View 1 (cartoon, helix red, strand yellow):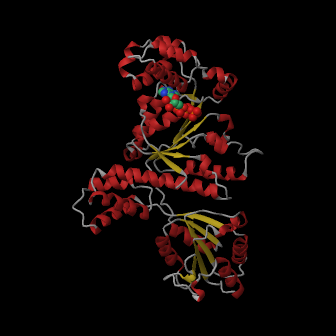
View 2 (cartoon, helix red, strand yellow):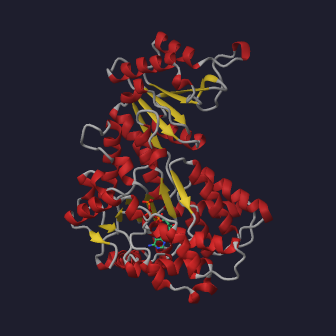
View 3 (cartoon, rainbow, N blue to C red):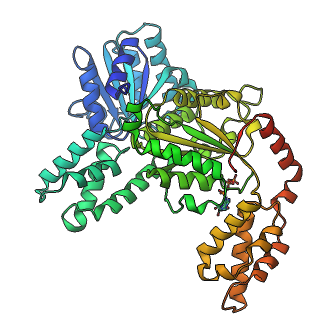
Length: 505
Ligand code: ATP
């Protein structure tokens, strides 16, 4: 497997290429300082500006200007550095500046510095912005290169846990538990890992199997804070899906590979990449993503495309890279991209913006080259809106089409939902009758009529659920096929034309 470039590797590359502004998106300032020192230390001078000290010495953070006990404003610092012409052989590290990157004077001064660096008017100079918040003013976009913090490798996480246990004079903890905690902590930074361990420890002064759930919940919070991914709780399994037998069989085979990845690789089997599931709304696409993660025995990460599209130029791409890096760091995992067509619709035609086109490029390259066990499940309603490059072989392992459930599938879906809520009543319900009355209903419609039937039965003080209650609910529901009549038949034609695999048998 190709070794991932670290933050240090990237900084060395950018230094050698003479890039003007590097934006390190991180809140691990101490660790970043160490890396900056290692890459840029002598003979270059490193200066820092932060909001507490103003311009200061990078190593000890001692302010240069102590007059009035007020830190020098960023704008004044930048102006002075340009005026005095003392930027040569200087690395200028800026911290706490996200709010200032909205000020026109600061933007203009940074642009001046960047342009001097790019044109060679100052030598060996670079501005490094270190911030957990990404703000890229459009005026500076072409000068800024964004780089994200490093995620820790599995062995490094184990080392942090062992060091933590030693420092806290812990009683011996089994290697197995250390491994399990390390797996649960994948995808977090050293700072986050140390925080979670300290919190887990503080509850009862040790680290036991019981803390695993706590670690998992904390990680869920931290992933959420990253703003680009969400960790979805796994409450569904493959038996929660009624029908879609072809798709389920296919997933079972992929799960076998995924769960025996080393053995499969030795045998010559490639790493599964992912699947695109497209088709009719409410027919089990999202449900399948959730059930697949349970089947693969890995966490489910949901990529929210709406949140990914940032307000600032360059932010969306950086968010996409962060999401991808985070998914790779957490892997093995299932990465679920919902409503794919919303993110990449209009690429290649006049409706597609430059941002989406670039975002799409980042995603395609990752799909093409990815060799980590992060299995992508992309779901979409309308495949015709997706760019053709995405549908080419090599991106997804397979593309499935999900249509309205057929007779035997409707039977299974009724069974799933009645058994889930009223298991003891199931044998008394006339499923055949319900199936015959629900031609054209989606899985979500069927779930809805079962739910309504149960609710009404309860409100009428009935001891048991009866077939009639569900039939009443069916009579009061307009099926999806009626609501989306023309759309559904157009969709079916499109899928047939493209020869997509049917998820149903
Ligand atoms: P959308 O495109 O609107 O997001 P979807 O295809 O992703 O729709 P789901 O969210 O998977 O639809 O389905 C909605 C709900 O309908 C599910 O939570 C589930 O309860 C029920 N459902 C849909 N299809 C099935 C099915 N095949 N088996 C069991 N339940 C189903």
